[in-house]
Length: 155
Length: 165
Image 1 (cartoon, rainbow over the protein chains, first blue to last red):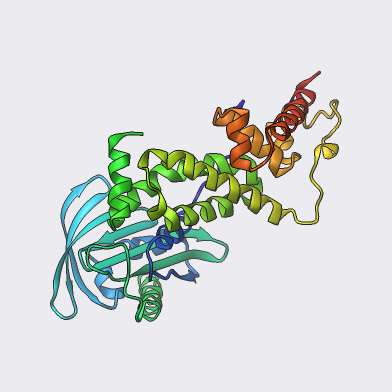
Image 2 (cartoon, rainbow over the protein chains, first blue to last red):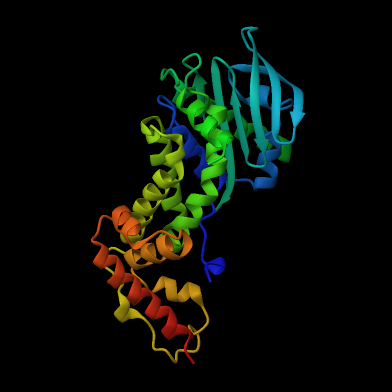
């Protein structure tokens, strides 16, 4: 009987809100982009191509190992700093952790387009905590840049 | 609980967000299975709120082996709360159940569930999905064991009525 009972399906944005709740200092910034998911995610989830274009502090990302949806990547910041990231990359979902940085991006189809959510920032080394300064501004900047990149790719 | 999951709990508590991610993967379907029948149309909100409470409180979980029971209690609490919020002012009780000869509802478990109160749905989930005893269900719902017995009886009766010819 219980096989037919309803189940709650969480979309990636729900999941990001939940995961960020366990990280003191993290803030989830959300934005509705007026484009379908199929146009938004190929940009938002393009680590080696677009990530450096829309993440304010990121210049270049290179994937060094792939094992299903688990990746290892090396990223270089605008200031030349190099960091090794553990990554989970799925449609509508990207979670990245290095010793000093956390980045989460999630997207889900929504009325009027695609809801995209972002969190992250400078990590308290080795801990699930983010230094709270500037995290909202950085995420808002990233989502603004992402929206511009999505529109540019759609043209 | 598997050794991997216990290790993930400890690593997550120590600050590894990749381990938190593993826990999110493990817990999301479970929380969704509990919140679905109880919170019904408010189920996605309930499941999200439950997972938020779980991750906020993860450091307070002393014994990793208690993860599932701890998460279950939080999920039930958030599901009942979300369902009440969604139906504030709308009485939902057994009197609202359809007549047994209602052809549209006779075979539709979802409709029968929808017409139960969140508390009745919680009892059914804890007993029939989770397989808990009446005493265990009473502890999670913070009600007397006798209340669990009577709610369960009435909830099951509603299913029997719905499926009776």
